[in-house]
Image (tube, rainbow, N blue to C red; front, side, top):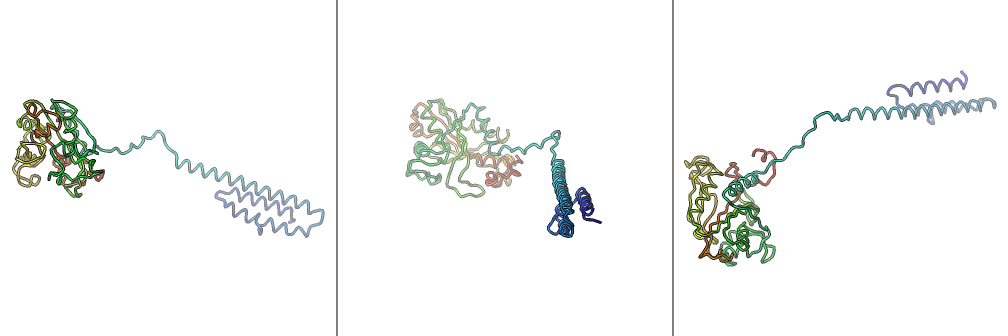
Amino acid sequence: MNMKDTLRQMKEEALEKINEVGADLEQIRVRYLGKKGELTAVLRGMGQLSAEERPVVGQIANEVRANIEEALTRRAEEMKAKALEMKLKAEKLDVTMPGKAPAMGHIHPLTLVQRDLEDIFMGMGFSIVEGPEVEYDYYNFQALNIPPEHPARDTQDTFYITDKILLRSQTSPVQARTMEKQKPPIRIISPGRVYRSDPVDATHSPLFHQLEGLVVDKGITMGDLRGTLDVFAKKEFGEDTRVRFRPHHFPFTEPSAEVDISCFSCGGKGCKLCKGEGWIEILGAGMVHPHVLEMGNIDPNEYSGFAFGFGIERIAMLKYHIDDMRLLYENDVRFLKQF
């Protein structure tokens, strides 16, 4: 076989291998066009040809090289397009399929309880009033009959920004601000975040939530306070719930009382929830101290009032039988979905 026939046969073999399914194009290129490839080997024998044959064989060799390179390039593009087509088919999005709805959040139990409480008191004619969480010492303490030297400040130790500015330790400053701006009759509740430098444990947190209420009008008595809290307890914990007052002391109310409700779990017989006592302490209340009324520019000889306050976390923990306050702040969806 002469060199011309060898080159033509080489081209046919190379093109055939290039078009095979799953062909290794790089291996084919090296085999035929590499430095040690078959085409190079043939060209090394051109020195044995006559002067007339060399240009003819050289032209054929160039044509074979060009044909093989063109075939390799075309086949590479075809294989790349095929691979892309297969990938697109594998990743194809069926727009007719129903979508996957994103997981929805859940209303936090503290929010659920606060909304319930707001509905109960608004149903009794109360308005919701909010105030600043960064508060003046005057409104947080002094306007509530707690001067700088008063021992009650120890139990409400909070976070001070300056000597006169702090994070409020109760929502009572909203009551003081309201009395300054609004003349009686006053009937408000003030829910919101409060801060105290308490350690984090199962029943304490440096941040928690309170809801306080204030009523000021002519002829307000302890009986009005009792009736208001009785309605609240029955609406929140059940119609069979009873209310009990125990004497206590708060600087901003006089007389003052700790308020208990009959255990809604055992009906007052004694259980784990009420620690066998049949009663659960739930809030503090009392008649507004005359000096607090005076600080709010309200004449205590003409007007009287009552105030009450409780922790929203405590209500939530009792209502939902939660035994660790920290669960309310960890934002574990598995916990929150229970409510």
